[in-house]
Image (cartoon, rainbow, N blue to C red; front, side, top):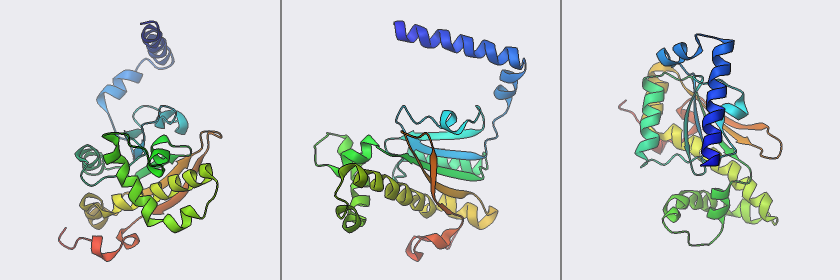
Length: 210
């Protein structure tokens, strides 16, 4: 219980400090949520969206899973996306991976990890799409980090393929989707790509009857 008590004590100190700085701080948060950004990130405990972006509570709407995946059968992700786009009206979506990602590294290997195999198979597909490039990289860490980048790019395109995003592009000209990677050893975010309309995806994925 020692660690949990430390967390509770830290929470009380943090809340007290916020009130000392701004007595109305929590009242405003309780009554309003208007983030302009949806963050799709990895569950890794070292990659907390608000911490690494220096943003405050209420500024970023967050969804996290292993290896920052956008899977079209994931109702959790799709529900978050629907709410962010059609209720919160976010202007930007950031898919953020991180170098040294354990999920990506596991997908690049051949170990049987039980039920997590089903999730990692989506990353294995990314590996297969780019196998020629990846297998030309002899250093394992460098290969994994390149797969991290390619995975982010594929997940950005997966977002673009959803009817939720395409409909919002058609009628509201938003959101812009960004692919970033975070460096654990540097603390720096690296932009990889941005997508603003359906021209970035193949015609087979585009919807006409929106």
